[in-house]
Image (cartoon, rainbow, N blue to C red; front, side, top):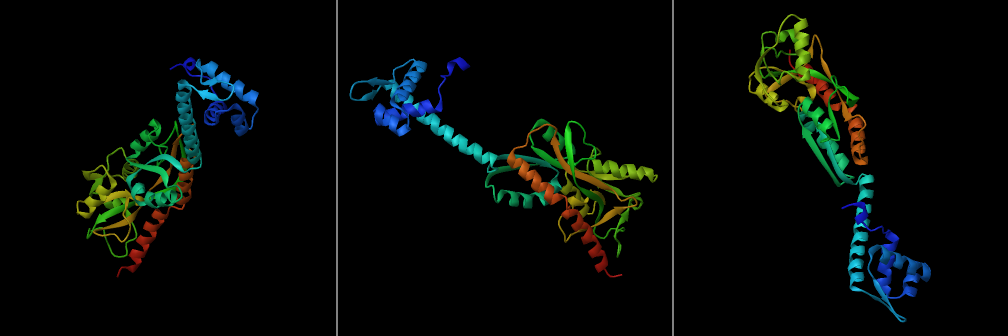
Length: 324
Protein backbone atom coordinates (compact mmCIF):
# COMPACT_ATOMS: atom_id res chain seq x y z
CA UNK A 1 0.00 0.00 0.00
CA UNK A 2 1.29 3.46 -0.92
CA UNK A 3 0.36 6.77 0.62
CA UNK A 4 -1.68 7.59 -2.48
CA UNK A 5 -3.88 4.55 -1.80
CA UNK A 6 -4.97 5.88 1.61
CA UNK A 7 -7.91 8.33 1.58
CA UNK A 8 -7.04 11.69 3.15
CA UNK A 9 -9.79 11.75 5.79
CA UNK A 10 -9.83 13.28 9.24
CA UNK A 11 -11.38 11.98 12.45
CA UNK A 12 -13.85 14.87 12.49
CA UNK A 13 -15.03 13.93 8.99
CA UNK A 14 -15.60 10.32 10.04
CA UNK A 15 -17.65 11.51 13.03
CA UNK A 16 -19.71 13.76 10.74
CA UNK A 17 -20.64 10.90 8.39
CA UNK A 18 -21.54 8.65 11.33
CA UNK A 19 -23.75 11.36 12.88
CA UNK A 20 -25.58 12.01 9.61
CA UNK A 21 -26.20 8.29 9.13
CA UNK A 22 -27.59 8.06 12.68
CA UNK A 23 -29.87 11.12 12.59
CA UNK A 24 -30.87 11.02 8.91
CA UNK A 25 -31.07 14.79 8.86
CA UNK A 26 -28.58 17.55 8.20
CA UNK A 27 -30.30 19.78 10.73
CA UNK A 28 -30.33 17.17 13.53
CA UNK A 29 -26.78 15.99 12.80
CA UNK A 30 -25.51 19.59 12.76
CA UNK A 31 -27.19 20.25 16.12
CA UNK A 32 -25.63 17.10 17.60
CA UNK A 33 -22.16 18.06 16.37
CA UNK A 34 -22.65 21.70 17.39
CA UNK A 35 -21.84 22.96 13.91
CA UNK A 36 -23.77 24.73 11.13
CA UNK A 37 -25.73 22.87 8.49
CA UNK A 38 -23.71 24.38 5.59
CA UNK A 39 -20.43 23.32 7.28
CA UNK A 40 -21.75 19.79 7.75
CA UNK A 41 -22.86 19.63 4.12
CA UNK A 42 -19.41 20.72 2.93
CA UNK A 43 -17.75 18.07 5.08
CA UNK A 44 -19.93 15.27 3.71
CA UNK A 45 -19.37 16.40 0.13
CA UNK A 46 -15.62 16.41 0.69
CA UNK A 47 -15.69 12.86 2.06
CA UNK A 48 -17.71 11.68 -0.94
CA UNK A 49 -15.28 13.43 -3.28
CA UNK A 50 -12.26 11.82 -1.65
CA UNK A 51 -13.85 8.36 -1.73
CA UNK A 52 -15.35 8.80 -5.19
CA UNK A 53 -18.73 7.37 -4.12
CA UNK A 54 -22.13 8.72 -3.06
CA UNK A 55 -22.70 8.08 0.63
CA UNK A 56 -26.09 9.78 1.03
CA UNK A 57 -29.04 10.28 -1.30
CA UNK A 58 -30.66 13.66 -0.56
CA UNK A 59 -34.31 14.55 -0.97
CA UNK A 60 -36.46 17.35 0.38
CA UNK A 61 -37.59 15.43 3.45
CA UNK A 62 -34.86 13.05 4.51
CA UNK A 63 -31.32 11.96 3.84
CA UNK A 64 -31.10 8.29 2.80
CA UNK A 65 -27.83 6.42 3.26
CA UNK A 66 -26.63 4.41 0.26
CA UNK A 67 -25.23 0.83 0.43
CA UNK A 68 -21.76 2.32 -0.01
CA UNK A 69 -22.56 4.72 2.81
CA UNK A 70 -23.57 1.89 5.16
CA UNK A 71 -20.36 0.05 4.37
CA UNK A 72 -18.28 3.15 4.99
CA UNK A 73 -20.05 3.96 8.28
CA UNK A 74 -19.30 0.46 9.59
CA UNK A 75 -15.63 0.87 8.68
CA UNK A 76 -15.51 4.39 10.17
CA UNK A 77 -17.01 3.23 13.46
CA UNK A 78 -14.52 0.38 13.68
CA UNK A 79 -11.59 2.70 12.91
CA UNK A 80 -12.64 5.24 15.53
CA UNK A 81 -13.18 2.53 18.14
CA UNK A 82 -9.74 1.02 17.39
CA UNK A 83 -8.19 4.48 17.63
CA UNK A 84 -9.87 5.08 20.99
CA UNK A 85 -8.65 1.74 22.36
CA UNK A 86 -5.15 2.32 21.02
CA UNK A 87 -5.04 5.81 22.49
CA UNK A 88 -6.07 4.47 25.88
CA UNK A 89 -3.50 1.68 25.66
CA UNK A 90 -0.72 4.10 24.72
CA UNK A 91 -1.70 6.29 27.62
CA UNK A 92 -1.42 3.31 29.94
CA UNK A 93 2.02 2.48 28.51
CA UNK A 94 3.11 6.09 28.98
CA UNK A 95 1.75 5.90 32.51
CA UNK A 96 3.79 2.74 33.16
CA UNK A 97 0.63 0.60 33.31
CA UNK A 98 1.25 -1.63 30.28
CA UNK A 99 4.13 -2.88 28.21
CA UNK A 100 6.91 -5.45 28.31
CA UNK A 101 10.25 -5.02 30.09
CA UNK A 102 13.21 -7.37 29.72
CA UNK A 103 16.10 -7.35 32.18
CA UNK A 104 19.27 -9.40 31.58
CA UNK A 105 21.33 -10.34 34.62
CA UNK A 106 23.30 -13.10 36.29
CA UNK A 107 21.57 -16.00 38.06
CA UNK A 108 22.29 -14.91 41.64
CA UNK A 109 20.79 -11.47 41.11
CA UNK A 110 17.85 -12.98 39.23
CA UNK A 111 17.05 -15.43 42.00
CA UNK A 112 17.89 -13.45 45.13
CA UNK A 113 17.19 -9.80 44.36
CA UNK A 114 14.76 -9.67 41.44
CA UNK A 115 11.83 -11.53 43.06
CA UNK A 116 11.27 -8.82 45.68
CA UNK A 117 11.90 -6.07 43.15
CA UNK A 118 9.40 -7.67 40.77
CA UNK A 119 6.80 -7.98 43.52
CA UNK A 120 7.18 -4.33 44.49
CA UNK A 121 7.20 -3.08 40.89
CA UNK A 122 4.25 -5.13 39.65
CA UNK A 123 2.07 -4.39 42.69
CA UNK A 124 1.15 -1.05 41.10
CA UNK A 125 1.54 -2.15 37.45
CA UNK A 126 -0.38 -5.44 37.14
CA UNK A 127 -0.52 -5.32 33.34
CA UNK A 128 3.21 -4.86 32.77
CA UNK A 129 4.93 -8.06 31.61
CA UNK A 130 8.38 -8.49 33.13
CA UNK A 131 10.91 -10.83 31.48
CA UNK A 132 14.12 -11.78 33.33
CA UNK A 133 16.93 -13.38 31.35
CA UNK A 134 19.75 -15.15 33.20
CA UNK A 135 23.21 -15.62 31.73
CA UNK A 136 26.93 -15.10 31.99
CA UNK A 137 28.49 -11.68 31.54
CA UNK A 138 28.90 -11.96 27.79
CA UNK A 139 25.22 -13.05 27.54
CA UNK A 140 24.17 -9.88 29.37
CA UNK A 141 26.21 -7.68 27.06
CA UNK A 142 24.82 -9.42 23.97
CA UNK A 143 21.21 -9.14 25.19
CA UNK A 144 21.64 -5.39 25.63
CA UNK A 145 23.58 -4.89 22.40
CA UNK A 146 20.99 -6.78 20.32
CA UNK A 147 18.01 -5.03 21.91
CA UNK A 148 16.62 -8.21 23.48
CA UNK A 149 16.94 -6.59 26.92
CA UNK A 150 16.02 -3.05 27.91
CA UNK A 151 18.85 -2.96 30.42
CA UNK A 152 21.05 -5.30 32.40
CA UNK A 153 22.57 -5.70 35.83
CA UNK A 154 26.02 -7.25 35.84
CA UNK A 155 29.73 -6.70 36.20
CA UNK A 156 30.91 -3.42 34.71
CA UNK A 157 34.69 -3.70 35.18
CA UNK A 158 35.23 -4.46 31.48
CA UNK A 159 32.29 -2.57 29.94
CA UNK A 160 33.10 0.01 27.27
CA UNK A 161 31.48 1.43 24.12
CA UNK A 162 28.70 1.11 23.10
CA UNK A 163 27.57 0.48 26.66
CA UNK A 164 26.71 2.99 29.34
CA UNK A 165 27.19 1.85 32.93
CA UNK A 166 26.14 3.09 36.34
CA UNK A 167 27.71 1.84 39.58
CA UNK A 168 25.40 0.02 41.98
CA UNK A 169 27.53 -1.82 44.54
CA UNK A 170 30.69 -3.77 45.19
CA UNK A 171 30.38 -7.54 45.44
CA UNK A 172 33.16 -9.18 47.49
CA UNK A 173 34.53 -12.61 46.57
CA UNK A 174 34.03 -15.44 49.04
CA UNK A 175 35.58 -18.87 49.41
CA UNK A 176 32.96 -21.60 49.69
CA UNK A 177 34.19 -24.74 51.46
CA UNK A 178 32.66 -28.22 51.76
CA UNK A 179 31.44 -28.99 55.25
CA UNK A 180 34.30 -30.33 57.37
CA UNK A 181 37.00 -29.11 54.96
CA UNK A 182 40.47 -28.73 56.51
CA UNK A 183 40.35 -24.94 55.93
CA UNK A 184 37.14 -24.63 57.95
CA UNK A 185 38.39 -23.70 61.42
CA UNK A 186 36.72 -22.39 64.59
CA UNK A 187 36.45 -18.60 64.76
CA UNK A 188 37.71 -18.24 61.19
CA UNK A 189 36.56 -14.98 59.65
CA UNK A 190 38.24 -15.21 56.23
CA UNK A 191 40.30 -17.44 53.94
CA UNK A 192 43.47 -16.06 52.38
CA UNK A 193 44.07 -16.76 48.72
CA UNK A 194 47.42 -18.45 49.37
CA UNK A 195 45.64 -21.06 51.54
CA UNK A 196 44.02 -22.35 48.34
CA UNK A 197 47.41 -23.27 46.89
CA UNK A 198 47.30 -26.92 45.98
CA UNK A 199 43.50 -27.14 46.26
CA UNK A 200 41.51 -28.29 43.23
CA UNK A 201 38.66 -25.79 42.87
CA UNK A 202 35.19 -25.83 41.38
CA UNK A 203 34.90 -22.94 38.94
CA UNK A 204 33.04 -21.24 36.14
CA UNK A 205 34.65 -21.01 32.65
CA UNK A 206 37.93 -19.12 32.32
CA UNK A 207 36.29 -16.11 30.60
CA UNK A 208 34.38 -15.15 33.75
CA UNK A 209 35.66 -11.94 35.33
CA UNK A 210 35.85 -13.12 38.93
CA UNK A 211 37.89 -16.19 37.93
CA UNK A 212 40.36 -14.01 36.02
CA UNK A 213 40.64 -11.65 39.01
CA UNK A 214 41.49 -14.54 41.35
CA UNK A 215 44.00 -16.02 38.89
CA UNK A 216 45.77 -12.69 38.46
CA UNK A 217 46.03 -12.29 42.24
CA UNK A 218 47.33 -15.86 42.63
CA UNK A 219 49.99 -15.30 39.97
CA UNK A 220 51.21 -12.24 41.85
CA UNK A 221 51.58 -14.49 44.93
CA UNK A 222 53.66 -16.98 42.95
CA UNK A 223 51.26 -19.85 42.32
CA UNK A 224 48.58 -20.99 39.87
CA UNK A 225 45.06 -22.01 40.81
CA UNK A 226 44.11 -25.60 40.01
CA UNK A 227 40.63 -26.68 38.97
CA UNK A 228 38.76 -29.94 39.44
CA UNK A 229 35.39 -29.17 37.83
CA UNK A 230 34.24 -26.43 35.46
CA UNK A 231 30.52 -25.69 35.43
CA UNK A 232 28.27 -23.22 33.61
CA UNK A 233 26.02 -21.85 36.37
CA UNK A 234 26.62 -20.36 39.79
CA UNK A 235 24.12 -22.58 41.66
CA UNK A 236 25.86 -25.62 40.18
CA UNK A 237 29.15 -24.43 41.67
CA UNK A 238 27.62 -24.31 45.12
CA UNK A 239 26.04 -27.75 44.63
CA UNK A 240 29.48 -29.22 43.83
CA UNK A 241 30.94 -27.58 46.92
CA UNK A 242 28.12 -29.08 49.01
CA UNK A 243 28.88 -32.50 47.50
CA UNK A 244 32.48 -32.23 48.75
CA UNK A 245 34.13 -31.92 45.32
CA UNK A 246 36.25 -28.99 46.47
CA UNK A 247 36.30 -25.28 47.37
CA UNK A 248 35.12 -22.52 45.06
CA UNK A 249 35.76 -18.79 44.80
CA UNK A 250 32.39 -17.12 44.27
CA UNK A 251 30.85 -13.63 44.32
CA UNK A 252 28.99 -13.11 47.59
CA UNK A 253 25.67 -12.67 45.81
CA UNK A 254 25.91 -16.22 44.44
CA UNK A 255 25.63 -17.73 47.91
CA UNK A 256 22.14 -18.87 48.93
CA UNK A 257 20.32 -17.21 51.78
CA UNK A 258 21.48 -18.17 55.25
CA UNK A 259 21.49 -20.39 57.21
CA UNK A 260 23.87 -22.29 54.94
CA UNK A 261 23.69 -26.07 54.91
CA UNK A 262 26.33 -28.59 53.83
CA UNK A 263 29.01 -25.93 53.26
CA UNK A 264 30.80 -22.95 54.80
CA UNK A 265 31.73 -19.61 53.25
CA UNK A 266 34.24 -16.94 54.22
CA UNK A 267 35.37 -13.66 52.68
CA UNK A 268 38.48 -14.02 50.51
CA UNK A 269 41.44 -12.13 51.99
CA UNK A 270 45.07 -11.33 51.26
CA UNK A 271 44.05 -9.92 48.85
CA UNK A 272 40.40 -9.11 49.43
CA UNK A 273 38.85 -9.01 45.98
CA UNK A 274 35.54 -7.46 44.94
CA UNK A 275 33.65 -7.09 41.69
CA UNK A 276 31.89 -3.93 40.59
CA UNK A 277 28.22 -4.51 39.82
CA UNK A 278 26.25 -1.91 37.92
CA UNK A 279 23.39 -1.15 35.61
CA UNK A 280 24.17 -1.55 31.92
CA UNK A 281 22.35 0.14 29.05
CA UNK A 282 23.13 0.84 25.43
CA UNK A 283 24.21 4.41 24.73
CA UNK A 284 21.48 6.38 23.01
CA UNK A 285 18.76 3.77 23.55
CA UNK A 286 15.37 5.02 24.71
CA UNK A 287 13.88 3.37 27.79
CA UNK A 288 10.11 3.27 28.08
CA UNK A 289 8.56 4.97 31.13
CA UNK A 290 7.90 1.54 32.69
CA UNK A 291 11.49 0.38 32.09
CA UNK A 292 12.78 3.67 33.48
CA UNK A 293 10.68 3.18 36.61
CA UNK A 294 12.02 -0.35 37.08
CA UNK A 295 15.60 0.85 36.58
CA UNK A 296 15.02 3.48 39.27
CA UNK A 297 13.72 0.81 41.65
CA UNK A 298 16.72 -1.42 40.94
CA UNK A 299 19.06 1.53 41.50
CA UNK A 300 17.47 2.52 44.80
CA UNK A 301 17.41 -1.04 46.11
CA UNK A 302 20.84 -2.19 44.99
CA UNK A 303 22.92 0.76 46.00
CA UNK A 304 22.58 -0.36 49.58
CA UNK A 305 23.85 -3.83 48.50
CA UNK A 306 21.78 -5.61 51.16
CA UNK A 307 22.71 -9.12 50.06
CA UNK A 308 26.45 -8.40 50.20
CA UNK A 309 26.17 -6.91 53.69
CA UNK A 310 23.99 -9.79 54.83
CA UNK A 311 26.65 -12.34 53.91
CA UNK A 312 29.37 -10.31 55.56
CA UNK A 313 27.44 -9.79 58.77
CA UNK A 314 26.31 -13.41 58.75
CA UNK A 315 29.88 -14.64 58.45
CA UNK A 316 30.95 -12.50 61.41
CA UNK A 317 28.01 -13.60 63.52
CA UNK A 318 28.64 -17.26 62.71
CA UNK A 319 32.34 -16.92 63.58
CA UNK A 320 31.62 -15.24 66.90
CA UNK A 321 29.04 -17.86 67.86
CA UNK A 322 31.40 -20.81 67.39
CA UNK A 323 33.04 -22.39 70.44
CA UNK A 324 36.80 -21.99 70.70
